[in-house]
Each structure stands twice: as C-alpha cells, then as structure tokens.
Image (cartoon, rainbow, N blue to C red; front, side, top):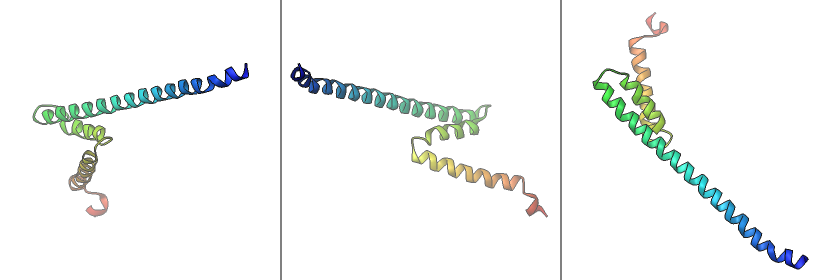
Length: 103
C-alpha cells in the first residue's frame, strides 16, 4: 500500500505544478489586459483633450489626466507630465506673484 502511494506522488506533484502554471498564466493575462486597457484609455483621453482645446471643454485638464494615466506605462509621458507641471508652476508664479516678491 505504501509503495502505491509513493508511486502516485510524482503524478500529484505534476498536477500541482500544472495548476500553479495555469494560475500564473491567467494572472499574467489579466495583467496584460489591464495594461492594454490603461493604454487605450490614456490615448483616448489624450485625443479627447486635444479636441477639447479647439472646442469648449477642459482640454488641458483632460490632457493632464491622460498623461497621468499614460505615465504609468510610458517614460515619455512621465517626462512630459513633469515638464508641464514645471511650466504650470512658472505660469502660476507669473500670474499670481507671491507676497514675498511683491513687497
């Protein structure tokens, strides 16, 4: 009886390994699907934001939101977002000077 049980251990181990592999592949597939959806959503928002610059709507806000979504996947979007943040701070300081500089 013990020999029969020992003989089935490799079979059981193979089933466990196959189950783990299939679970890993499923998780990997779900992660890839989420990544693709984030990319599509980001580029869609970017396109809508560009259209809203010419039409009524919060175009720049939508573009910044799109870059925030795309920055999770692309380095170029992260760099552009940082550059726009710096330019926004510069613009704010030009339009609304701080009390220290005004005095």
